Length: 451
Image (cartoon, rainbow, N blue to C red; front, side, top):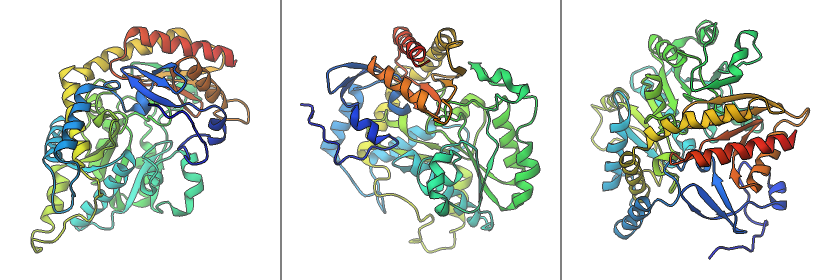
């Protein structure tokens, strides 16, 4: 039975204008397939996979049954100096899906924890190799790597950083962003559909010619990027960008970390963005879709080279010595691992990654044909099963126009994500053409009303 006597006195909602929410609560009480049921009995299409998480759709019975069976068998067990059978199986499945020699999985509970874990692995790896002076990290403007202090430090979204500046890591730099439609040579990049933008300049020259010389590359531990900048508003890297970044890191002995919390497990029609772009990083951060969002889980997939170096550095140490002082109470939680196993099996059984790849162009076609040219629309970017519609901001009120459109769509039965002045669709992989037509049509009508 749903609890409908909502009091706004106790819950503090994350990344939400709480004062506005209190005047217009948006509360879900059930979900099935592509739809939510709200507290007032309305059906709402989940156009965003509930923040990029629910790739297989809601209330999938194989995942639910696996969780129930696990609760009846082993509800919880410590991950320190012991483990559980499901954690080994989940790690085996994830490693088998990862590219190259990424075979070692460190479990945590979220994308934010995965980001900080990967940064700590990078520092520990270089120290194990006798290069402990490598302690500088390089992120990217408008990148998002969670909300823990390490992830915020390498992240580049100003609103996530400005209040916490005094506590951010000091030895961090940021590369130039991957989207610049105001540049006269990049005007065509405002509207991108199922392709990679081509730049006439080498955007990574700044990394090679300014950032690395400034710090000396021998002091840099790692570069961390999202293959596609998801949280900022689905910004697509220039053609060849990630391969060039891999070459630069290799040249200077710098680790390359892909934050695939959003692009991992099917969003681009492949297991990982690394597969889509044909680039093997040294680490992949994951979360969200790995359990279909049902139970929190995150992790870092590390290369054999990293693991072997850290084990080898302790070869002469006593057998009881811990090689890497890091972990969480709920690392490899047996119920979360059971959910992950069932989710990955479901993805494979229903061929959902390929389905995401097939439905992506359908979503992009709809957005570009129905929304391009509408009032205040200044860009549309689609790749994989995601599309972002960028609106011109209201003078002095950045984000307001998109927020108003988001509210309008919700009340018309469609959940779209507002990210700054972007409106993003990233539906579950089970989405049908009829859902896409409703989603995009509802957004188009709301944009017209907001003009």
